[in-house]
Length: 287
Image (tube, rainbow, N blue to C red; front, side):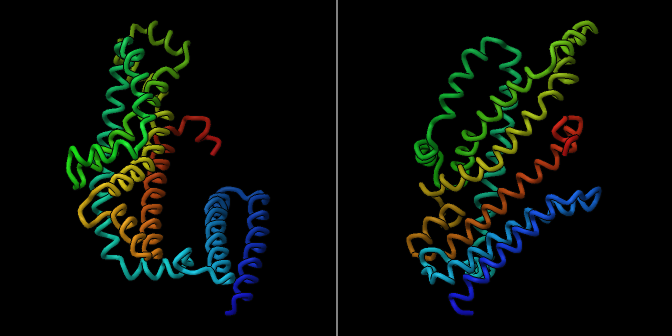
């Protein structure tokens, strides 16, 4: 197909997909059909973006070293699966998962302690907000120097990035229970832990899951950025920084695609669990 043909095809596909999405959104589907449409609309939107990308890059003859088309990225991804899988294991299955579990777990435990000991709220939370504002570019090289070049230093960066969002959201959520509900628990002579487990933690679940979803993407970003400052010859961040230097931009985009897919799947899994746990919340019932 000629350059002009690619451009015309991309624009026509975009117009047709736009009209179809408009019709799908406006049509009053019900039940299973509504769920199918809810999946079809974002899928069609994503495919449209890829077609536009492909058509405009080829239509305007953009050099692949500047922006490769999706087809070239896909070819590189398929041909480099062993390398990308090794990078995924190093970055995600080790640094991200370990750091995410530790950071969220420590943040949640500290939030319970802050809620139990009032003076910690005044002393710890301001410090937490200060540390949370520190740039990852400044923290990552220090932790890499302290803990070495392997995945534990990247996991430590992830812990720092995920700890404070979990802490702040959980503390906020623990105060979200209605005053009348708290009075009712006191009327029943409930202890602190009974009120915490049966009222305040369930009420805090939307806030906790909000932190979990935010941290699912922050963790991956933190691990990849930390790998820029030293890592064994494997890892998503190592692959991106190395291949940029070699001008293999299609491999860079393949690594980015794997990272984006991993982050999206993590976010989606947590969102599904949230719907099961907080089914009572108005935002879930409306969905």
